[in-house]
Image (tube, rainbow, N blue to C red):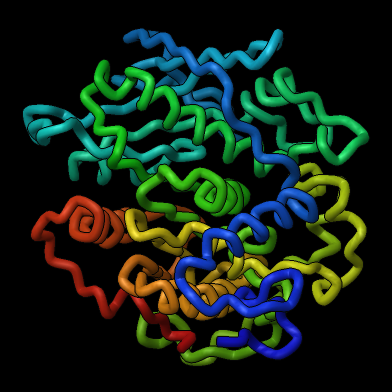
Length: 386
């Protein structure tokens, strides 16, 4: 079951002994999580007291483009306390129209998105509620380590006090899920056990981190996550040519520059990680590879849906995410969970598109909810890169 030569082997423990049974996986997974905390993303936090308030007014979405009123949304404010520290932030919650989508028994399924989704209406029309988190309020996208998360857990010099921004954003999605379990689900007619977490680009990276550390999310859907997400550090598509004519693109699409490790460690992006990550000067030095991050979400009661774009994603390195899917798939196969790991590559668009929802949500309905949705399962396990 060994991975590609000279790549970290997910089937070998740190002490050199082999992973031979399904029962061994939990121990190996915990070992990998600790390694990701130590070497890349920083410390995962949990166990806080999570309270909330909900109102019908004042909901806004905060993005790179400014503050946008969230018309028709509930305004959710989370109040988090740990020890003597407390913090809060607000985000909109969009609910399906009950006249178009009657509430199912147990409540609506829901999506926790790291940000507002342009394709959100498609999800609402399919009967899924949407939390559009304001991640910038949780953790600033820089090295200042400001925001609600860092009010609770100040970033310090010692490794035990360091949590990078990607992990902080992942934590925020987890706190939203805490609130749903703590009564918000009942208040808003949501089913706590039918959750999806998603995000695009840097928020796709945070989605992948969240899926690896909070095993309660039933479907994990990182989109266009790139380096530091699900693009492998050791696989470059730069200069490679692919025939993408089957999706209406070029029959000789040559990939341009992929995001290098040095960019992740630059002033603009190093805040995503802990300080230890800065020590690695080449991908080969990193003791982890990102198929291990995807594999950490593997469990019999959940599933994974990797999203990427064939074109316009040279920097994000879409072919590398296909390599990630293949390598992580070996672990899912080993655990007998092959159908729990899916992917979809759309033609273009740095986003979660309606096209993605049209495949992902029926897949969720079929695999997680046991509904008779028609899904071409074979199409969700391949790509043109194969």
